[in-house]
Image 1 (tube, one colour):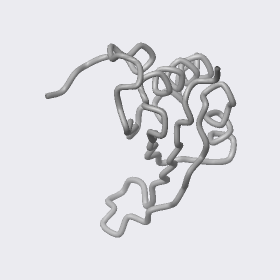
Image 2 (tube, rainbow, N blue to C red; image 1 turned 90 degrees about the vertical axis):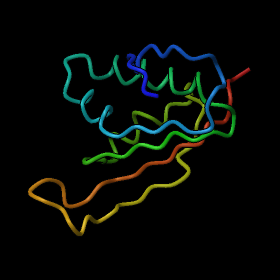
Image 3 (cartoon, rainbow, N blue to C red; image 1 turned 45 degrees about the vertical axis):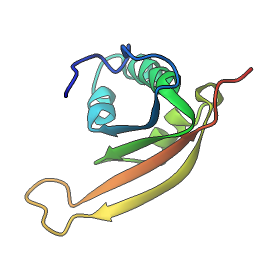
Image 4 (cartoon, rainbow, N blue to C red; image 1 turned 120 degrees about the vertical axis):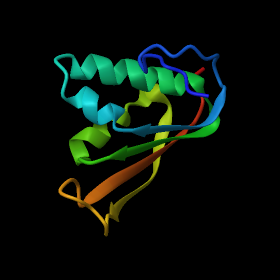
Length: 110
């Protein structure tokens, strides 16, 4: 079952998921006029729906240190657990590699 909704306002209760995966949504938001606002709202929603100890996995065609900093804010309550670059052997004219970031959610600040 697929549900259509805005990542900046998810229709799920708090602490529902062990894993949230983004593939391309963050990349698209980087290209908007309200990048900082859109990324902040999305990060807060992901944190809200993740269970403590859950993971936020981001797959992107363009990760750099500045982009990582956007998600390392203390108010999101997560740590960068791992990151890697995956080389695409059968790539067409598009990306030759993708970047994977894995953040672990620590739970809400009390």
